[in-house]
Amino acid sequence: MNSMRFRAKYVSASENGDYYQVTFENTDPAGDAADMDGPDSPYLLIQRQFEDPDGGRCYVETHDEGYIGHFRLRSIEFSPSRLLLEIARDRNNRIEVIFDIGQSEFEEVERVIDIISGRSSPDDGHAL
Image 1 (tube, one colour):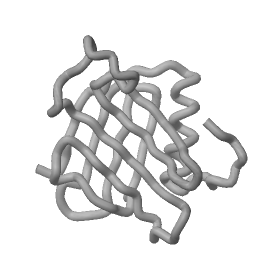
Image 2: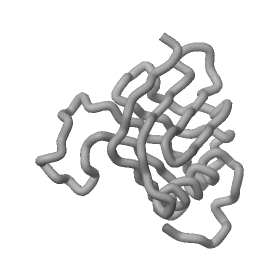
Image 3: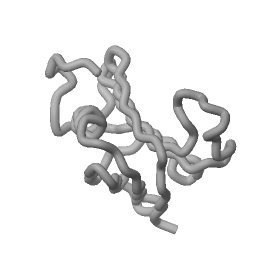
């Protein structure tokens, strides 16, 4: 299998110093036990740090161990309803996440995705 696709209920972005992260998941990040899909629930986490030289690699983590590791991104497309991530490697290299977020949430997450992908600099002075 070279691709994974799932639907996410929650999309979030965060930054902590030189670390930037976006998460797509089905478990409420606020911890609402009534909205849990279980420990095997699909998720995607993309993280990049700018503290040390990273060679342009991002950390990718999912519910599927075949997609976990540090990788260069071949491409990343992001819209208010879909993320398409292509990892620069031969197999398990495509992840698509379908979701539904509002415009303000989209802009917040898009800013972090642009930093992670290298399309913009983490030194733009805007904090989440």
